[in-house]
Length: 237
Image: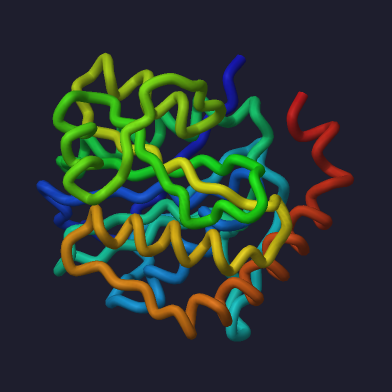
């Protein structure tokens, strides 16, 4: 059976016609760091938590307060939602996570989902390309200054978002960025955050804050991975 992922809404939010950002970590932590940086530089509030009976039982403590490791933040002024996670999900969860994101986007009438995937290529952090699920998504990527990838493969949550988006007509853009696979990868996180901000009108990236968040997020993600490591064999069967 496929793992079930549940969203518990904490309050209603109006994001009609807006954007949803996938902040699940992939290779390295750049996706999570760039997404978290964006939530700290604008007026984002937590609007939901994401959980599963198969997730490792971990509470992440920030500023003395307990937090679910996977949450949804939103900025109604910018019409932006962010799925933000300190958990690097096992591949058995990738399709379920993508499905959850697409359902949440549909329920909140989201126009564009933005995801990202890392390519392990040191020294090429500024080389960003985009992949679109639809003709309109590909045009949006070009207008944001991204070169559109013509051939290649995209794994995991981003790949599933692209496939399902192409069938349902949901605009999805996956940003392909380069990293050395080590954290905190400030350079690739900065380039990724800037690329996302070009796709989301009004969004911004504070570079000095991003560096601080890169260091803090890297520590927390590593701790979450270490705490859950000994549980993985039993949790993901």
